[in-house]
Image (cartoon, rainbow over all chains, first blue to last red; front, side):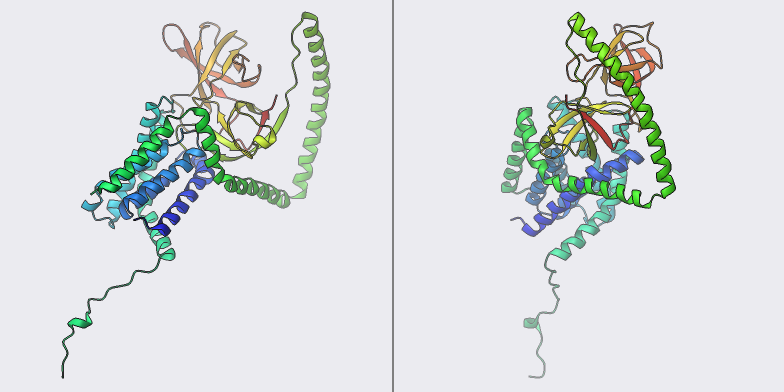
Length: 184
Length: 267
């Protein structure tokens, strides 16, 4: 059902992204004022290329990783990652997933929808997240910035996948059983 | 599009995480500590990188600059020793007066230096992780300060690291006093803050005529978490919140975005 090596390296990538978020990403945000979070891009990648179970499992575990180092309520990010992933998964059979325009739009949709779903969930359970002009500005800016990064992330993860997985056997259109034998 | 089995699995996952959201805070906090321990190596690396950077800077700094810095520090040390001498006599006088009128004696703060090793990754909260944990005697709700003033309080505590909830986070409400106006208020997150992170709102103020820009704001000691008299910042402007109360904007003394070293008050 689920491709285990793929599950493993997607989790590893998720772990690295969360680690970057709490170290370099946070410093970058303080210096530039721009919030860059690469997790939505990983969710887009999984929703457009992986099986639905892989997407849900990796999204849930990365959400737990994220919440464990944040002041978020535990589990809130997992739900928002899965829901955002499902939204993208629901239209993936209708679009050309390899087109950068589709990846760009999906990156934008996911980067904006994840914070919004998280915010709604936090409000729903009675938490008081800060939602001021700066937060809205950050969500929009990071949405557009992440959208530009999405095709790049697709390239990087594809390269990692090709490195860790067996190479695909290229099928030739030649079929020996259909060869016309001549000269007999 | 969605196969039946997959759909059931996803519904189960969402339900499990829905239950996680509704768990009591204590259980959720313990689970967080357990799951967060997978990031201990990252915290360790971050702490080591800071130490290596510091030692590299020390090696590459010219000797003349180091000598001038030592000279400055020695001068400052002498001045502080004189201040301390004066403070000791004031402290002793205060202790005697307190004994005479039957007030409980004030204990001096026990401080522990901590280094900031990671920052809050989400948009909604304000906080960072420090390199002190339960092994160093850190407990939830201990006050955290910098030489410029109050920084926040301790949130979740791991074995070797802890999370600090900063001023301006909805989970860090502080009762404050403005001695010049003899008014009390509560620190709240700023609704109009943009980038700098240095402005906070001060709510539930009442003294309309006495409040003025530039007045200093200190912790009031009410509420029991923060000791009285820790500086927080200065009033920037005052406005009407509703019919009953006033609201002020304050500029925080400590630059919460640029902190690298902080002190935890253990007692």
